[in-house]
Amino acid sequence: MDKRLALISEHASPLATVGGIDAGGQNIAVAELAKELARLGFTVDVFTRCCSPMAPEIVQWHPRIRVIHITAGAQDCLAKEDLLPHMDEFARNMSRFIRKQALTYSVVHAHFFMSGLVAMQLKREFRIPFIITFHALGLVRRLCQGSSDGFPIERTRLEQRIMQEADGIVALCPQDSDDLLKLYGADAQKITIIPNGYNPQDFFPIRQELARQTLGLNAEEPLLLQLGRMVPRKGVDNVIRAVSLLLQRHGIAARLLVVGGDSRNPDPTLTPEIGRLQQLATDLGVAHLVTFTGSRNRDELRHYYSAADVFVTTPWYEPFGITPLEAMACGTPVIGAAVGGIKHTVLINKTGFLVPPNDSSALAEKLAVLISNKSLRQRYSQQAISHVKEGYTWARVAQQTADLYDLVTNGRIRKSIRLRTADHQASSLQMPGMP
Ligand code: UDP
Image 1: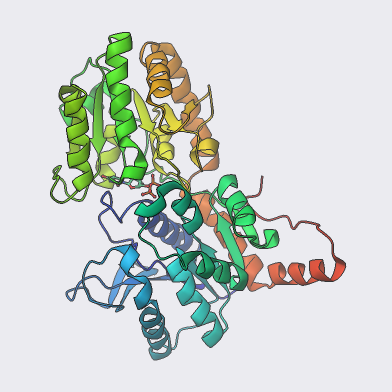
Image 2: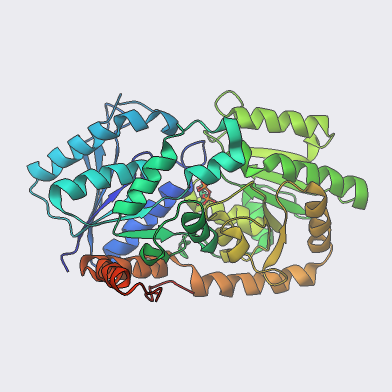
């Protein structure tokens, strides 16, 4: 197999600083996947939208990885909800780049539905098969976010078209696969479940006292960590409510660190969600217990995870959720909402607990259990470390992805679909990553 790949990630560049509104898990996933695929011997071009006139067209990011900035709309930061009208231009400019450089890709891997539209056009023009990872599905987002979803209603129809034309679809977890099948009627034969991962070089346990010392944190007080993009659907308000309940019901004064935002210092002007949450903490009388740090770099995060007694994440929905993996890799038990990928990555009574989303009362009770039981935390910590090491390193994820590329480029997925149609049989193809 020719080992040159194109990854398209229109709004989520692997070079971006993450933690704000539009830069998070997808940026990390594309970056880490590219690095591990390069390690497997692939030459990788990552195509992403040009957000600044100062950005060079080509960045040689690693010896085998280039990041190519494609002009599509103004060379400025635009919200991802405003990008759809520029995807034709993206496809035209990407096609021009491929022709100019006389490139031959064996497979295109599109990330997010708008990149899928680009991949569809390239397939027509160059006959390159493509894989799509949606990362988030429009219908799920609309069900959870209602009128605050800024994407046009036509997103669903476009996603369905992409599912029909794609040669393979990556679902991030069984819930994602179910949504593809039941909400969209996607072809089961095309779907492979491949999770996201974590990088063991960035995430490993550090002694808690040392981690707290490094960060200048109190050595004694119970410490909860919330880390991620600062958007309402992450349910940080729910965690703040639980901190207040923990104090009222159990007399436990636990500090909550909230890491994330569009700048290194917490700035409500840049990140309005921080302002909303600060106000909530004040209204509930727990402002003295909630610390907003702003965003942090990858190489600092292990200190935050290791310093915490419990990692908390209770989003309304979560296509996958990388942060629980990172927390577990650092040996920190997780209490997560029983949604999306979190339902599968967090093992109940083994690496943490699951609670319903938006249920601060249930969360407070589980927090009380973990905070007051050190030996339980230690047990979960050890179990968490081995659990994620076994199933979720990016190296493993990249190998599963490479196996899928192999299936697609050999036409084995397409052949199996033809066979199935002919035989009217529901026999299922064994694909990598399937449980
Ligand atoms: N992240 C980071 N710095 C921050 C906040 C978040 O590097 O200040 C990273 C975090 O470590 C994780 C990613 O952003 O790797 C968030 O991914 P996740 O899948 O949890 O959520 P998403 O952003 O996809 O909604």
